[in-house]
Figure 1 (tube, rainbow, N blue to C red):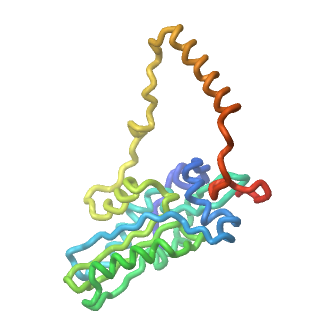
Figure 2 (figure 1 turned 180 degrees about the vertical axis):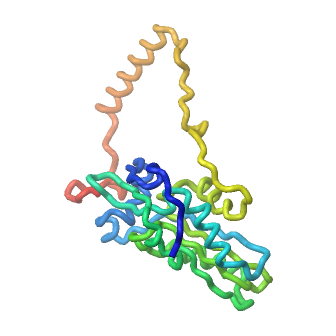
Figure 3 (figure 1 turned 90 degrees about the horizontal axis):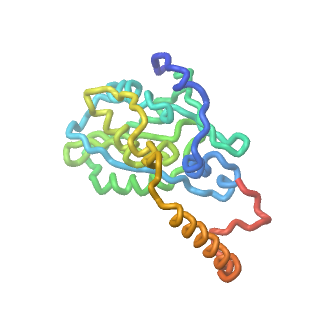
Length: 235
């Protein structure tokens, strides 16, 4: 059983994902994508540890105290009315730690090259959509006296930099803190523009001209794999 402190409403209420997140979630939420056997986009990485036999219970505790504090890492994903919804698990008794953390004894035979092969295989595996979309594999007792933590995370949960930071937080002494709005999310548009009215009029007229030329002179795109046939049901 996994114990977890009670979270705020923000950590437990369903939330609608962005369009970009929806795009990455379709292989696990859309029946059409599943039927066509589309593979999900995964972020996979290896963390090498100097300890050949790390304490598994300690790693489990760190997962609970740090990784599971991030709502997306304990959320289930689904399509609802054309939108992707992710809903964090509230009853942590339902969190399957054995699924999310697999322990393998390398018996002094596993090399870093073997770890690279595991990375390649991880990109081809299918998720269990009834569980959060990430898995860790701890390979103990490698041939060089080290151990390895293989991290496999669906791109639905976030971008590579953010997810790497979450994984590396397992080895930080300080707990994860909730941060405010990032600088990149803030609008940098000035309150008042200093463009002359004449320049605005010229830009507007040129836009109309370019649109007219493109509409009546430019040909349609040739048939290609990016076009969805009209007789196909969209997801």
